[in-house]
Length: 142
Image 1 (cartoon, helix red, strand yellow):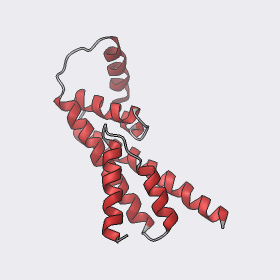
Image 2 (tube, helix red, strand yellow):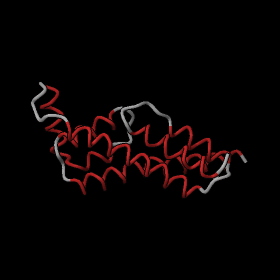
Image 3 (cartoon, one colour):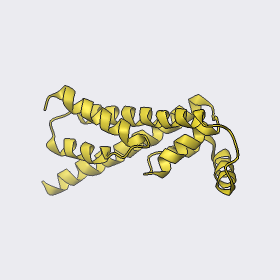
Image 4 (cartoon, helix red, strand yellow):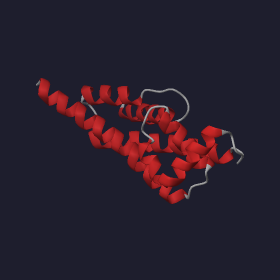
């Protein structure tokens, strides 16, 4: 597989995994790390960038939703998110919940810069931890 295709696949997979569409960028990252033919740092950077941009897509979707009360879940979610603020996006890496957090953060119209910073940190830490665990496991087996 060419480097361009390898990194392009990682970007596409991580982007789609961060949207409301299903994806498995973690499996691709681990597979590429196990193959050992790519730059680990560049792979993590591309995965984090794609995943962050996918999360921003969810935030934009949230911004497009009308601001109206949706019931009891709305009160609970908005109270928690207002208390946490953009820092809630540090948990945007969580499956399913992370996508919802991004949509709700956009819907609540949080400020862009804190949202992007917290989103990028959360998404990047996910891939750093996964890569570190994979590489550590590879050393253990050798």
